[in-house]
Image 1 (spheres, one colour):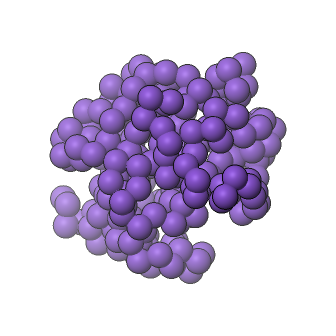
Image 2: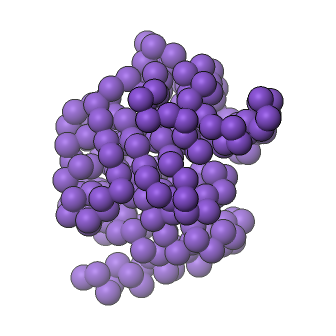
Length: 214
């Protein structure tokens, strides 16, 4: 079973990621390694490596592989970082991040999703992921600052608490826009200055919380 999925993961990397500009070898290796099919419903496992998002519980989604890789590459992780993720969802993005950094802190607001993700992290022995149930737009101040922050839901603005909790230097990736379409933005903090760059058009589920959608 794993052999079959390993071959499919390699095809995903060669056909979906590399041709679209995913060139960070560490990111490509993480995408080859993390078993995406473990993070979707059993009935959808045969489609887990397709070039599209898939539904998960509570009306949420698991992003298409390319978007996961693109957002991960934008953080430019070297291995020593402490990363905050907002929106655990299926847990797949946190799992990919965990292969590329020292520690992942991830926040989810929907209990059933958090419980499912935690179970998979344990099964895969991805023990450098810490997860909690909370409003992700508030961040996780007790463990800040974070070298990198990733937001996996689309909000109307960049939540101020996340900017405050970002280290200097640090990088933050977030979809910003309306509830239909967003721009994926890369935020860089350097010597007290904030620089924001648009990367590409994306469509994410809503970032719900005090500093997001109501």
